Length: 143
Image (cartoon, rainbow, N blue to C red; front, side):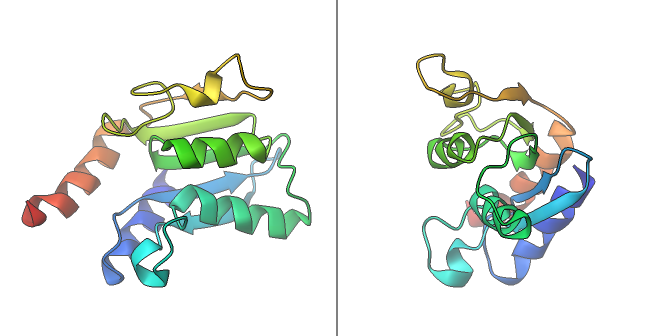
């Protein structure tokens, strides 16, 4: 999670919401890194999770990320949860809960929805206070 917090901190340059993500291969090596890049690229899909998934798939030469783990500072939104499941990622670890748009158990539980053909194990709240503090510090002067 520390590496994810570091990725998120780099969002200050672009003015993006500070969210960072990494993808770990089955041996625990980082194969994909991402941070929010929506403002930087004017791309509504450039969430940290999607960027990290794209880079991990590129590194493996395969979009099937079976056996991998996605770690992210904020609970994934519905779009990211869909991308995670589409990539066949079996484990998601996140820090702060997103009570407005979370899809890992707060507002929605897409990642564990039994009606879908793929599901992921979810480990929530890892360094949650630290992840939430980073987001609160970003939004405080904007409100």
